[in-house]
Amino acid sequence: MKGIRNFIKATRYNRAAAGMVQDSNKIKLFALFLAGILVSCSQYKGLLNKEGGEYEAIENSIIDYYHTNKDEINRYEVFHISIKTNDELYHKFDILPEENVFSVLDTLGSFPSYFPTNYKYYNNKLFVWNDRKTPLSQEIINVLYENNILDSIRLRYETGVYGDDWESNRKDLPSPPLFKVDELLEGIDYVICKKNIRRYVKLKTSEYIPPDSEKLPKIECF
View 1 (spheres, rainbow, N blue to C red):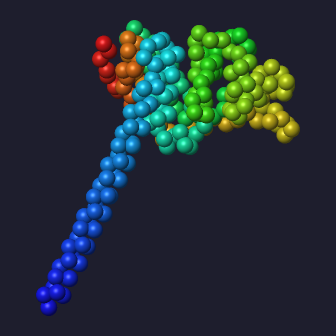
View 2 (cartoon, rainbow, N blue to C red):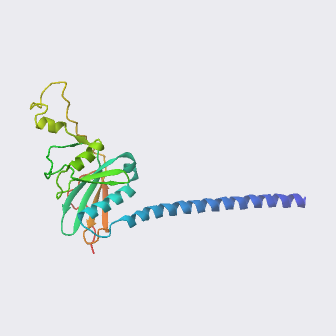
View 3 (spheres, rainbow, N blue to C red):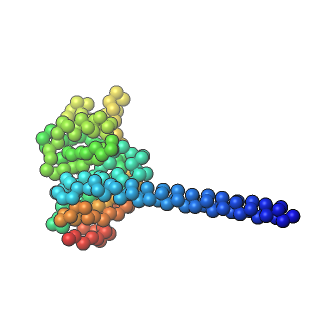
């Protein structure tokens, strides 16, 4: 009987020990998984520009956006950056997935008020913005065309290629694309210190926030 009891005790002990080993392994795996997330989240910080002007600050916002907004990055291919203001202390941008095409109405060499004039590819994702210092070029036209987000139908109507009657009922003429508005689509507002462009705050929202609004996050620059 003692032998049987000892056998039962040994079996229970071995099972308990095995359970503890399994639990320990699970904890180790979870710890490694969590460490991997923390490393991957912090690694991109080393890619940020340490200094520079508006362009380098835009690059930093692109890098941060790409690495911290995986749902949008996985769903969309093109992102539009709006330069909200360029005051003495801050760069203020917002980045939003682009669901519409851009209608070109300006001539090459001009300085459009909205149409993109600059771009950057980051890990095969396209980011475009209107750079007030950069004129409209054939290069950006080609980039937008290659990504299927360029519309020239409006320009053809404006220049008379399709006639001068926008109200024409001719069925052989194409209609300009409709502008989609998704009120639930969220963008990221960035406030970046000019003195240290690695120092920034951000806010994710579906609401348009003016550059001087109190709703924008605050940050001390030093």
